[in-house]
Length: 249
Image (tube, rainbow, N blue to C red; front, side, top):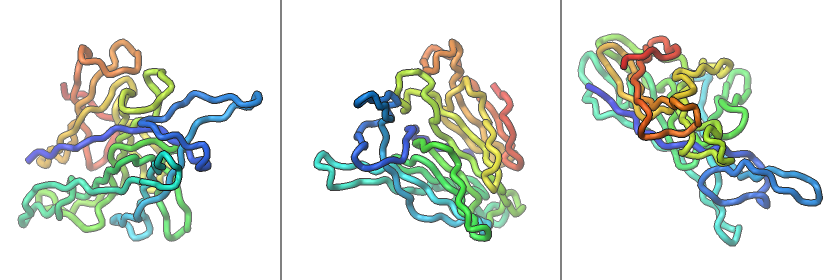
C-alpha cells in the first residue's frame, strides 16, 4: 500500500519584539533604515505543545509564528496536527495510524522551527539556527510499530521545509525551492537528502522495501524558481538508514 505525504510550504522567520512585527505571508528580508541604523523586519514566535518520541529522554517542541490583528492587541498562532495513515493493522503490520511505520509526522500553520528537548541533559536544541516555516516534521513514533512482521525503530528526524530565499525576491515563501533534511537523534548533524537544485513536490511510501520515493522538480536553469517547463525526477530513500537520495527516474 502506498502512502502520500501532504506538504505545506515554508517561511523564514526571526524572533523579535512585538513592535517590529509585520503581518504578511512570507518574510521580507529587506532592511529598513532609521537615522542611519539598519534593522531587519521580523516576527515573533512561541512554542507549541510537547510531543513524545519513542525515546523517553527526547521530546519534540514545534515553534509557531504569531499573527497579531490590525490593532495589535490580539494574537493568533498555529498548532500542530498529525498526518495519519489509513492502513489497517494486522498481525504483521501494526502501524497504529502513524504516517509511516516507526515515524509520526506533524505539520502546522506557520510552523517556523522545531526543537529537541533532552530530559537527561536538560538541554534544548533547535533544528535550524534561524526560524523557518516548516512543511512537515517526522520523528520516532512513541508507540512501537511492526513492519512485515518486524519491530520498527527509527532513530532520526526528517524535516521538509523552505529555508532559503532561492529566487532572490527578498521574501522566503512557497515560491522558493523546498528542501528535505535528515537529522540524527541528538540534532548534531544535518544532511540534505535531495540535491539543493531541486524543489520537493511530494512523496510516496513503499512498505515492501521500506523506501520513501520523493518527487522533485529540477531547477535546471539555477534561477531558484520552480517552473512548469523544468523536469520532474523521482528519488528513493532507504528508511532503515536514510542517506542522500538516489535517482529512480
